[in-house]
Amino acid sequence: MAYAGICGSDLHVLHGEMDGRIRLPAILGHEMSGVIAALGHGVTGWTVGDHVTVMPLDWDGTCAACRAGNNHICHHLNVFGIDSPGALQGLWNVNADHLVALPQNLRLDHAALVEPLAVAVHDVRRAELAAGDRAVVIGGGPIGALIAVVARHAGAEVVVVEVNAQRRQNVADLGFEVLDPATTDHVAWVNDWTDGTGADIVFEVSSAAAAVLGATDLVKTRGTIVIVAIHTQPRPIDLQRVFLRELRILGARVYQRTDFERAVELLTSGLIPADALITRIEPITATAQAFAALETGLAMKVLIDVGSTGPAT
View 1 (cartoon, rainbow, N blue to C red):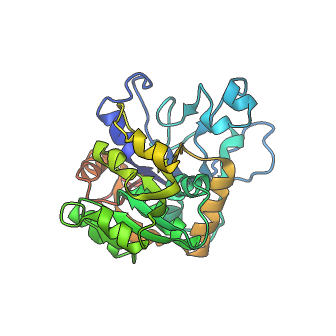
View 2 (view 1 turned 30 degrees about the horizontal axis):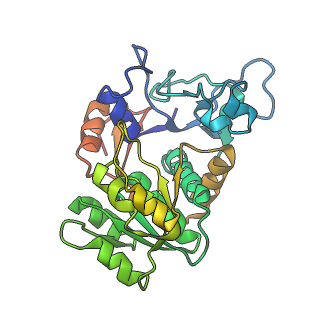
């Protein structure tokens, strides 16, 4: 193992919101980069020393979703680092089918962003976003920022709505217009921005009940709302607005292999500002401090240097 990222899903685990899926002792971590240390009997196509990441999903292949070709949302999906042991360990034994190759010239700390970037790639692809679309991203955390970057690269105009001042600054530093809903009537702003039409696509990445309820006010007639955030309880939504404007509401969960491969391409090409997105790197001995930093909501992406026992950088 080289680096493992921690994210909002790990915080849900920490807060006990996934206790039904966790078996103690648990090894978290589903974002990673590493180097092949050994090969099992009969494994072909890989070499010791290859740089890799792991697509941390395992499906049963027999449920209705799998039979329909949607393995990534298997009804009995096993997510490594949540449902089974994950990346926060020095050596990790995984089935070769879960490996995704990394170019040797892609830095391993940057490569730890492949998994969250694959989430963003999947979200944008699921939205069927097209060049020239106007998109609103509600929530300027790591996934929201990555969605904004991917959407911009696809040719969309993007604005981000974020309540936290530090996150607003983080996203603004990436070159985006960022709105503070506490001080700006963002519905009126989007209305002006789109000449009264409304946004083509709204990505809800904040997990806030108010964001879900307000998303329908931001999107155009027959526009699309993509629910990206994990909502651990039911949320109210303006179904009258959905009805009147024939809105489309989509869920977007995890990713498919094509999204992982596209994420590797984007990172390798330099189109993703990886250094700007990685707020801090902690040694594995400081994992608790890394979680505390993530808990503040101020960090964009926190990585664990799994092989390091030295001071934090």
